[in-house]
Length: 122
Image (cartoon, rainbow, N blue to C red):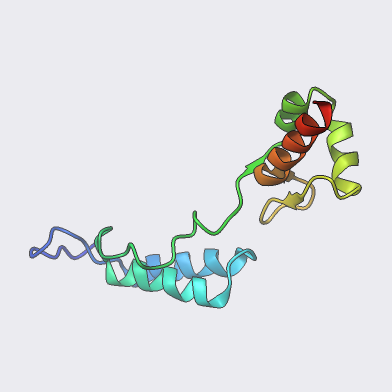
């Protein structure tokens, strides 16, 4: 149950919902304490999206990740070769938050390798 704020059409969040979000943010090891605090403030204050533009956005701070199978398709090789390239330091491999084995390749490192191989091939 939420309390409606008639002045702007936005609803306030229940304390139990804030507690659940706080627990989820604590479990996410990719966020800094400052980012957690900012995210909770956004939830509690119920800011309009236009008012929140100058504040932390969790989606902007993370690199774009590609699964090894998709990276292998782009490089025309096998996923096993992608893992070898990552262990050699040619690709940046990042573990997915909260997972032990699942990982992805940063799109930036893949693009860098693709551009380097294109330049070397010419």
